[in-house]
Length: 139
Image (cartoon, rainbow, N blue to C red):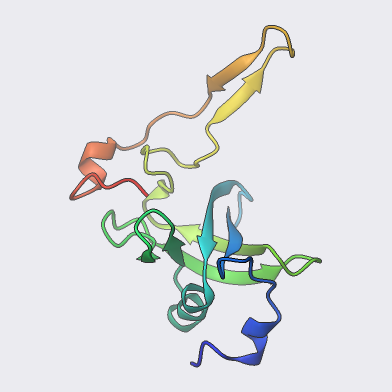
């Protein structure tokens, strides 16, 4: 598939050629994670049926689960009304999406009020991060 495909041109890529992506779990509708894609990542996601992102820190394509085995099977890809955010509806292999070993990257919840509130961890670690990654290279 050409990364110049017409459907890719509809996406409003930012000045770095990236688009924000939200991964949402099919069934539970849990928001699992937020990441970025470039044209090649989105094209490869469509080609393979599994989530492929762009790692800004490593400046390379990142097939989700390439080290951990926690791949994301993509069931649906949606583009928001402004055409500048992608939503992936996925099945998460291994029930762990976050490099911290949790189901979701959104495991911290604000509790309290503006004067005395704080972020509380509300989801348990399901798998030790040291056991997940070969090189313990966080995404």
